[in-house]
Image (cartoon, rainbow, N blue to C red; front, side, top):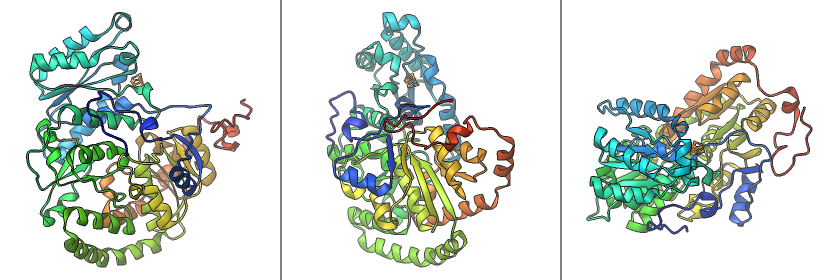
Length: 493
Ligand code: SF4
């Protein structure tokens, strides 16, 4: 189990803390076996096209705390994605009937001369100006490659400004170059929240923390009849809400890739039990997850009744969808745990999963409980998945594979990946809301959307006719893993 140390200003990166990797090709079963045996090795790529950045992932959680402000201590280019976060924030406000507000996002504008003389004075002045302009309840400072390379003492600035302004000013150490696994940025954001905002509990409440992105509020309906209240964190929380997440009765993870660190931190530091079963995707997965929830919340009888009721409602409809989807094939590209969830959903619906390009792999989560392993659950429940590729969004690998397997549908989790399927004329489905596929109803939701997508292929067929690929015929004929694991024995034209 990784030991949570809130005395340290930084969280260890996932490569070191969990042994996570970004390069693998084989079967899902092989990956699970290697991870269990402690023999998981990262297969290095000799060519890499692009990658995500931890700073962006930290920002995605912190930027939607409703009364906080975020300063990205960085050259202004690192903040080029602010508009995207603001868009998601504004859409989420409308969905929740919250008053419209623009994200309070700022950049300290590190310039060339600052990289020589240091940028801490500039950062301090930025914090002051941000406080004057928007009067936030807390200010987070996210770091960047530039601020880390020049060695700015951000903690000293944050502490000084906390004293000066009387609000928490918190360093979040998430510079992009530190880790190849950009989900380390989630851990950095949560570490900064647990380290500086969350207070020890004064009492226990009937709140249940739901660590999620900005998905629909499906847990209200489940938890309220059990006498519990869903508390969706971190996006759309307030600073005051976050101070007492330590008082909750339990923590639910919508996706352990997202919340592994926060779930473990709340359990280790404040005794808030984490639901450790893999998230509820697919029927057997939902059964197991609900039973674990019932055990933790001491509502086993009510949960058994719920399972029986939902089985009688959902299973006959599911059979009908299975019949319609029989013989269909799918390819998945997504982040780790959500990718595993999608595999369960597709296998439950009877689709043949031809392969998956999953952005990284955590051989273990921070709770160190093997029962949390969603990929092992997939393999044990539905059988192995061939062509399982751990691939940190290398489009050249994905396009090569898609061109060869030509599935009936590609399911993607990130917007930037969907166009590759569409350009090849493969119907592609992207669903941003993880909660959409959660639980019994989630299986039916996905089935309906898959059928719609497969039935409406005219758009992608036309798009493929009129689009060009940046990849040559030569590359599309190569082994997709030519640059993975040191196999660089290819001629480049
Ligand atoms: S922090 Fe580093 S990796 Fe991230 S956007 Fe800035 S320069 Fe790029």
